Image 1 (cartoon, rainbow, N blue to C red):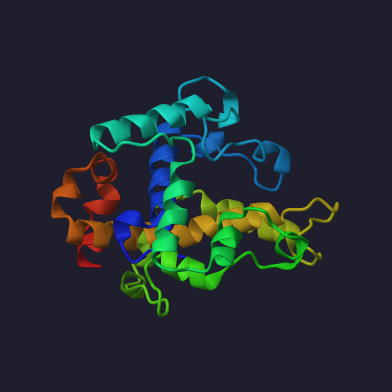
Image 2: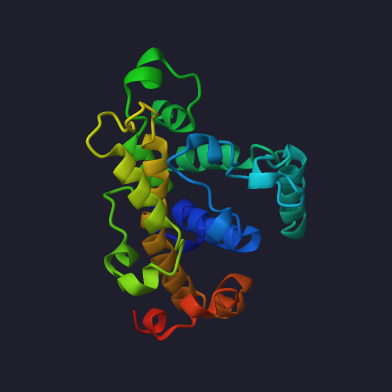
Length: 239
């Protein structure tokens, strides 16, 4: 669920992170791009990867110490006193929902704490009231920036490897059940991941535009300067 405040939106943050990471690592450029019809070529790639080593395919996960040090430095810079670093987000997220008087059971479900059999096996795991409150939409979800649809040719400049890979995965799945290819190999995860990237294209552009409109000084941020063909293009400025 997208947050009302674009600077706090986890979906936009995920999109910006992947956009920057893929450009930095080149892990999906040309011949580097794994074949998403072969799970063994991409399943081990970490979302939070170690960016400093030479591990092929970015299968080396980021060390907890790296995350810990980053959070500690941010808190120090902002002069915020806390003894929570690794789990700071879970602590603040839970406290924020308590301030908004969200039921404790919904907070537990959202944080996946002490799950019951129903929560674990038969729930959608989507406590909507808690999610809306966390996104600052307590009375009903409506995200105005999502109403602006960017031009397709602009969106296609982001994650440009997606079309080819998604077409290959869909072709492998076509005519078979449960997201499997003809040999019975499950490709549903590949299909969902690639479709998520397609969705993130639009979110990146919408959130970038909102961020610049609300905080013009951020136009000079390295993220926007690194992609002039996207964020300096006439299509982005007009849309």
